[in-house]
Amino acid sequence: MSVFDAIYGLRATRIFEDREVPKPILDHVLEAATMACSSGNTQPWEFIVVTDRGVRKRIQAEMIEAFKVIDAERAQTKEQLTDGAGRSVTGRAAVENLDKVPVIVVVCWNPDRGIRMKGEYAENPDGSLRETREIPGGRGVSLFQASQNLMLAARAHGLSSLFTTFFFLRREQIREILGIPPRIFMECAVFLGYSAEKLGAPRRLPVEKVSHLNRWGQVYHPDDRSTDRPER
Image: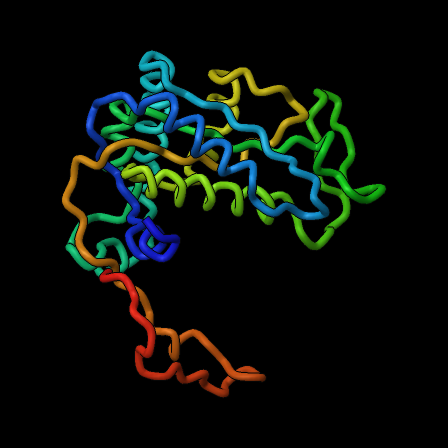
């Protein structure tokens, strides 16, 4: 599979088959994640690979409670909450099926490798850190690149994935479940497995709607498709 096939074929999957991901494949996609670029080549990532069903069920119970609040406070329109195939794009379906997700990779930031400047963070009494100086190229710059590598490598192996940050809704509870030390930042998670849903083409804004040439407001117009592109 070419890199473009993987990119164009990537879908946010919320319902997975309840079957194991072979370890050689898991090994390969994790290694691909470590090949990502990072701010200052700090390589600050840490990956907690959750395969135990009991652990997944504990996380699921926390997220079900969190979504009771979220669903009551949503401000988006119905159109914003569905994709091109009419599927819900909220995390509720993922939460309801979370115990069946074969692999959850929780992506964390290790300050022992990630801090680059003096005064960037200060330590709290409980050993956790707080940001005290805004530095361009923060935690997400490195971790999101690693997560994208992880997802594209998984796609190349025929796996589906879901990128999410909704674990923040129960941050302290999930940190405790996973035994994450106070100094370590839990940033995001990637669900991996074999899709149990038929996914249609995604709705994506065209290039000319989001691209500017040389300065803001001057529309960048792509040429007609002069090169072959994978079907979406």
